[in-house]
Image 1 (cartoon, one colour):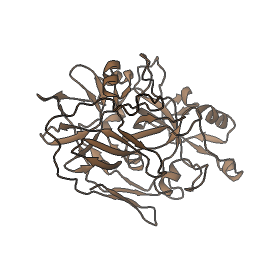
Image 2: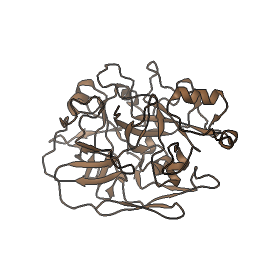
Image 3: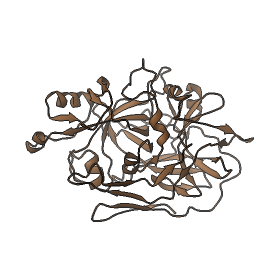
Image 4: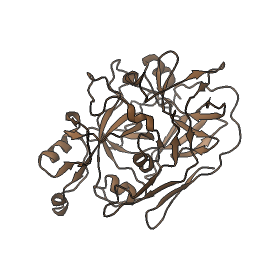
Amino acid sequence: MIRKIIYLATFLVVIAGCEKDETDPPVTQYPQKPSGKYDADPTVFMKSAIDMDLSNMTAKSVTLPMLQGWTANGEKTYYIITESSDFENAKSLGVNYSPIMKYAIGTQAVQNVTFDLVGKIKFMGTVDFSPVRVLIQGSPNAFPPSTAVPGSVGDANYSPLLVLPNGIVYNAPQVANNSGVQDRVLSINYDEMKVELLVSDGFYLGNQFFYHLVTDASDPVPATIENGIYAERLKHLPIFGKNTLADPSVNRGFALVANGETGINNPERQGLNSTIIDGGLEPNNVFQQDPQNDLANSNYSAMWDAHVYLWTDAAIAAGQRKRVKDLNQLKTLLDAGLVIPDPAAMGIVNPTIAGLKNNGLIINCAVISQPK
């Protein structure tokens, strides 16, 4: 049984944890590989995807293979793999290639893992999926929320970034254990070892339908808003505000607006106020880069460094607020004084994200597909 979302009149969002099906998965670990369904489709980056349903505006989803590992206490835990730092390994798994994840090795942002005798991962950290997710809008603006309690919380050792004994780094978020399931799980099949997860939309180079899967965040507020796991260790990732190939950084930048247009059917709807008010719809953020799975020196990462901006009161009063679809457009709006950097952002100025300052927040967000 999967968690259900209830939106109350006060915009209180609660997800009630339910017990999962007690049917055990097969003893033998399923090997992960490309599903074959999207091998010839260049718009799908994650070749291990078993299926995608992009027809439902409020419940777009991807179905991915699921693997079983062990917690430090010897209990079963279930996880997915979305990125590998090794080119050939990424190909064989059907996941995104992200060589820059190697820069996380030796930092507090990762967990080092080992294998049992049949190749199942033994995790140091685990996740409590039992909390009730609570999101209450703030005042006078919905964002920042007055209350944000994530529905999934990693322990002190949990990170989705795994360093294997051979030095390869996986982005492998946990999705279920005996405490429940991750908040983006729509369905889970322990017999066939697959899991259907809610995906979000966004923009890249002016094009919409940049489908991505949020699994973790380094702070409780974005973890709650994005239905992700609160994974505090991600705050130690190098380097905030540095996104070029020359930087020894795991992080890539994205821009998100706090006070964009709201309204479920508003074509200009965008931003954090909207996500909180409009029933959990995605904020339609603007991303810096897509996966480059055939490029040996790919600069892609699923570790996204948040850069928040706001529309000015004058721009809103003049009716100039609209969807921002790429970073060049955002830079033009900033130069014109129609939008401003988030005053609360205390990071360095990032010239690759229109000159915004970073907010010191990481969202683990694997890019799945970008239909043309």
